[in-house]
Length: 116
Picture (tube, rainbow, N blue to C red):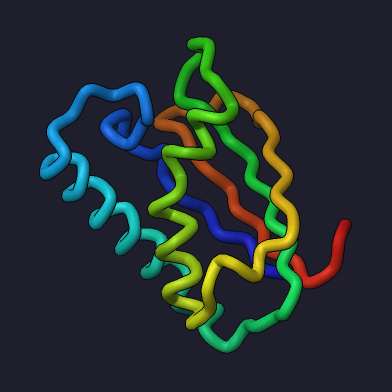
């Protein structure tokens, strides 16, 4: 089991954001790199069946949609699996939860080999 802590994603990554595709691509690239760097320490970890749990710790008490929060983290997911040298198609199930409000926000991603 590995756990990765990442910053709250930029609002430009929201599916509801009205951002030019080139500007959005820069944010996707940046977040993918950040996730990859945060995951490099786990480079040898491997599994055929991966269960992923994501806990969203928002930066404030504003109402947010769970689906949009997960969509904003797609670049993070890709960066994590880039660092592990695996394809994210190995993910068999994803559990999404809201955590406590944290200043600046945070996303906690846990990858497990067996279903919890």
